[in-house]
Length: 256
Image 1 (cartoon, rainbow, N blue to C red):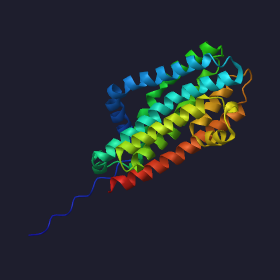
Image 2 (image 1 turned 135 degrees about the vertical axis):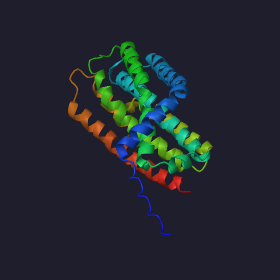
Image 3 (image 1 turned 90 degrees about the vertical axis):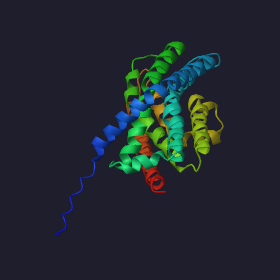
Image 4 (image 1 turned 180 degrees about the vertical axis):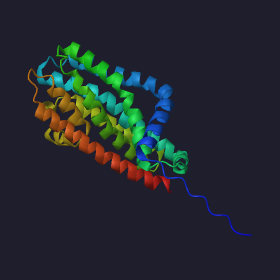
């Protein structure tokens, strides 16, 4: 009896359609579980600004506080929660499920990172508006958050995903995520001029710093848009690098 010819395999899924499918699935899954935490992140950032209002009157320091508090919402969700998510996913065998799907590894990482970063938009806008009114800063260029949120979100989400995938235990992933958010709080919200020199160098290494600087510059009467663009370009470069590291970490974790 002649052997039947083998059926051709289906072509692998393309990146963009697979990315869209993962993004929608993650967005739907996280909607109920993450919205209460988004309120916590927003309330935390607004509370920090209220406390700093008693210490900082205005000027450059007020701009740093408002910009840092707004980007802190992104750090809480995109870095902290994403590190916890991938740490738990790895520990519970959830990566095995994704490994059986015909989707590129980059689509899994980018889809999850994009979904988590999307939840930061309302909280970041609310924090920026409340902070600007609290410190008497102009709202003229608040639209720049349209660029700051996705670029800073990509950099922080990639870092959070990498921490969750590289951590040997979910508890360690949670700890690293908390430490990363604490660094964003201490180094991003406090004015750089009041920090010791060593902490200023540490601040330069934090991806969210450049999103904070870009937003803070827009409170000037005549913003230096070249400097704003350079800060956003650094955010974009760090985002590409951190997401590439997270994708590589996902490949390693998924085959173990």
